[in-house]
Length: 346
Image 1 (cartoon, rainbow, N blue to C red):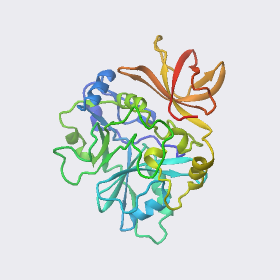
Image 2: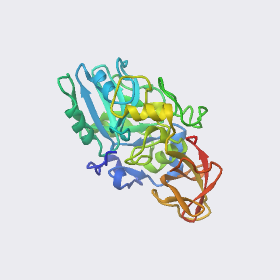
Image 3: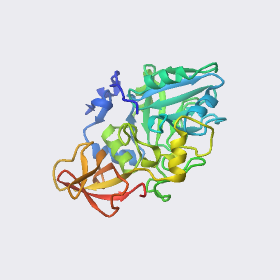
Image 4: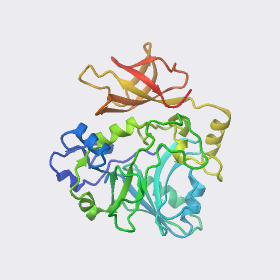
């Protein structure tokens, strides 16, 4: 897995009233604007936007771009129609997740948004894989910013023509793939997209809408069981463990790096770990930190990958645990009990 570098840019939206800046991977944007629970409600109602300008943006131009990306990543991208969104993964030779590509092509350029600080490593790898093909990858984060919106369509009324917007397919099954979690997913109907705009146009793209911070966006992501690179993944995560085949992996396409692991686990085995959703005991005033050990009867069986306070469900989390952990067991993170809901079936 690629280790992200700290974001270098600071968003102009941090000047908005109540903005509290994040740090680490969320550095450069606001984690909240004074009331994270209210901000969640505004997102659910479709009224707010989220500053994601710390995400990296990469473009790929040239007539061979889609077939080239198709050949190296997990999703079927060859012949992708203009303005169609896809999610695709870059895997290591052993099948471990290295990059999560949020990708949309406008007919001339493929636009990709990635986790903060990972774009340079992706472009460096892509440059090594160009060979004689007519492709040109470029890191353009300094010129373009990302804005998160609870909108499910490719474009919303009033969007100017030609604006690149990646629609999140989660939790739909995209193409020839498989679900490792429930087909009747609790996040069905979820609406979310990433709008890519010139940095100087970021404030205009927000307009007079209220802003929600990363705490609000993350709480809704956790509630949707949506995996995030660097949170639900580590150096040995395979896609099956986090139910990521459903949106990002095509099971019957040409060879790509890591494909043998995808096929072998899907056809012959079971993933060694499984992602689980946890309701945390909220009777105390503190929550466990991300990365805290998950225990069963005093024995470690995994760790917390994301922790949040949800405006309706209270303290919630995602965690990675051993596959054979009993599905009805009450787990603990420190002194806090955690009731599990199965995501990836053992």
